Each structure stands twice: as structure tokens, then as C-alpha cells.
Image (cartoon, rainbow, N blue to C red; front, side, top):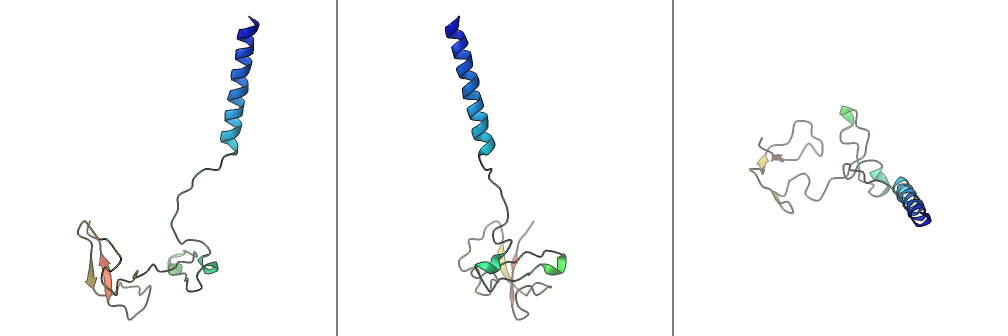
Length: 103
């Protein structure tokens, strides 16, 4: 009987250790890359979406304006670079290309 009581106590102790370990472990969090205070790591960051209430700072990825076509991008599913700037001029008014994403 003492052996089974010892096993039960050991199970309770191990269960408590597992619960404590899980409670103190940080969880993974998903989010957009380049949100928050990007100005700390890139002084060229801007509040590109500020006109829609987004105060986060963003940094344009290499060829993110698609002015060099799809260089450094892997497009699929009908996505392609097309002529014409987007109507809000988020990067520069002089941009001449946009990314077309079909439904």
C-alpha cells in the first residue's frame, strides 16, 4: 500500500512540475513583420498607413515598390507586376508599377 501511495504522490508532483513549466513558458505570437518601432533599426521607416489610423512604422522591402519588375520576388497564381501606381502613392508619386493580385 505504501508503494502505491508513493507512486501517487510522485505522479502528483510530476504533474505539478509540468503545469508549472507550462505556466512559465512564453507563448509564440504571430504578427506582421516590420510593425512597431521600426525606426530604431531603420531610419527610413515611415508611417505609410497613417491615413487609415495605423501609427506603426514600416520599412519597404527590397524592390517592394516593384519598380524593377518582379526581381527578388517569386510570384505565382497569376500575380504579376503591371503598369501604373496605386492610387494612394504610398511609396512615391513617381512610382510607375504595382503588383496585381488576382482573386
